[in-house]
Image 1 (cartoon, rainbow, N blue to C red):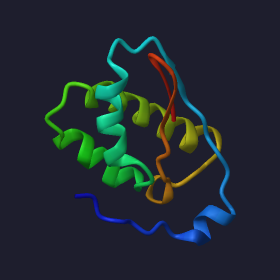
Image 2 (cartoon, helix red, strand yellow; image 1 turned 60 degrees about the horizontal axis):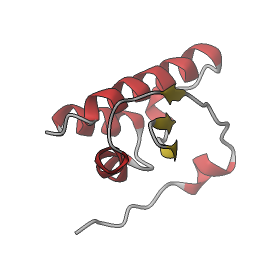
Image 3 (cartoon, rainbow, N blue to C red; image 1 turned 135 degrees about the horizontal axis):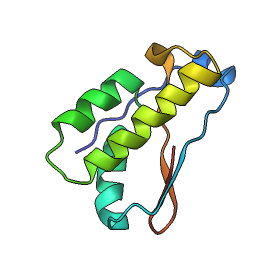
Image 4 (cartoon, rainbow, N blue to C red; image 1 turned 120 degrees about the horizontal axis):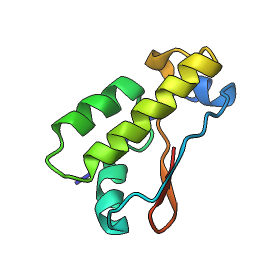
Length: 98
């Protein structure tokens, strides 16, 4: 059972996007989707904590993708990691975008 989670709308109305695309991740789409469903629209710190504690092997490449996207956001756009929201989707088989 998944709990509904409210996302603060004040951050969503005035946010900018930061993209990080990862190509050729050797994992099944279904295995990746199982991990991505758990971290969708969560804060960065909460996402990192969840991915570190997940027992799935698919969580480590996704954790690296989230780390890289957050590093790009703080370095190039001067975002604060405390207010970053994670939105990850699978564009094609073996392509993840954050």
